[in-house]
Amino acid sequence: MARRKDAALLVPASSEEAAALLAEYRLADRIALEHQLRTQKAIDRLKENLGEQLREIENGQTLRFAALKSWWEAGGKALAGRKRSTEIDGVKIGMRTGKPRLKLPRGMKADAVVAWLKSLRLAGKGRVLRIKETLDKETSIKVLLGKDDPLKTALAEKGLAVVQAEDFFIDTGLDEEAVNKDMPPAS
Image (cartoon, rainbow, N blue to C red; front, side, top):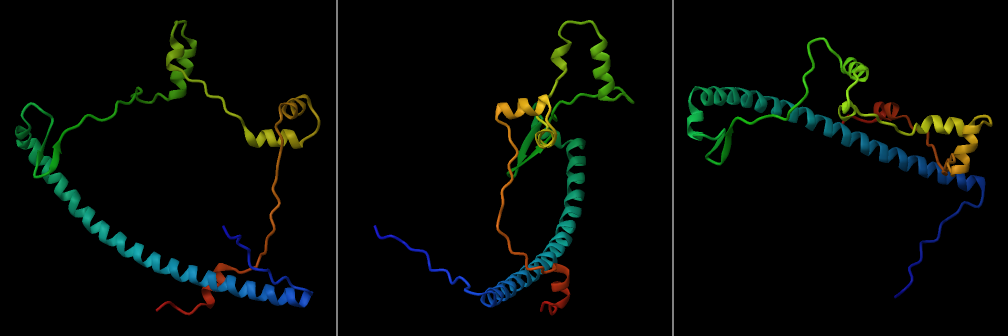
């Protein structure tokens, strides 16, 4: 199996060569940004047209749905016999039971129900209460970066640590709005 070698890098030998290479880098970045902006504008136009078309279809579907629901309730359900639904021309139509959900009395909040359940002296009330504990990562980072305290020591002894990666970057300083204004209108 032959070994592949990466192409040799043309590393700048002087600050002038580096400046020239950065100029090329910035120009390529601007060209890429212009392509992205043109493409995004075209996508936005397509989405707008699609939205209009879908609204028209949805309006028609709403009317058809209401008409078919009325037909079903007025006697179409007789086609299903003792079942709750039937198939007509490859389309299933009928009634289905939704997912069960808990209904609270009017004006009552879940927190009030929890407080009420906690006050009861009943065995088994824990079956309907849930306690959820999670690690607060942001606070853990603050503790590990903060002054010495027993919690910081305990976290560190357990092996928890704060890590931050350093990445090389080049910021071309291109402003999307400014480039967008400079671009000729899309044809």
